[in-house]
Length: 336
Image 1: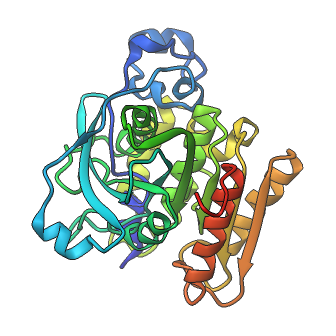
Image 2 (image 1 turned 180 degrees about the vertical axis):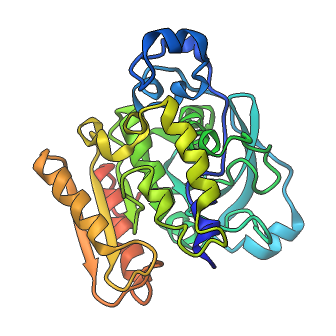
């Protein structure tokens, strides 16, 4: 899969319009005051600061069970079921893995990395680990994100589409209390690749202490985190750089960069990184871990010699560590 596709979609595609009435926009931008008055800075609502000031919420709705899905995903001991919810006026679909019994069950929100839209199936990028989590007694909720799995389309603006991934997850987190089988007091995050970047941004915007597992997260500074994946583009990334130049003429990109706000993270984290990862350099994870440790944040870093971007061949070991991590951080016993 060439890097140009990832450049546009590894963190750019997915959903929400923002609800300006719930917060006041900060005025810190690169434009002088007189120009700010003349130009509507519609994306400013997605800055880390403004994301932290607004309200989120919706209601998770269960879709009719699919016989095809049951045949492909259903296994003894749990149920795989489709759901949808509203994220700032746009429908987002998702796949849940639900343990047997009445609950309430601890919850893990699973945030996948980049997947090409062609041939995408609900739960792709998460269903395999979701089966392990559900067998361990966790309720897994994996959003498809806007533009995927029959969800509504994201914004036509590539940067707003990127920022909509954050509001999608934040709205889903606010919806958990609507599920009677979910323990809204025991919620964790799991993110792979760009999903790790989304999870870290959500931690900063929410200020919540959700236990979080990161698998080879994309943690380079925005917008380099996008430009890094454009070297194989037919135009060498020229079109994306043109869009970026326009964006940075209006906005201070640091206001939208997860790497510039690590002090806002207040959650325990476990980060898994393979040394043979060809998509996320090991140095990115090492640098993030150092920054968080310097800030006295709670982070456990595990490096796997010879493992790739999907943590192969130690995948099962990583999942087992995650189950132990979530149980300990949520205060669960082995029988729960």
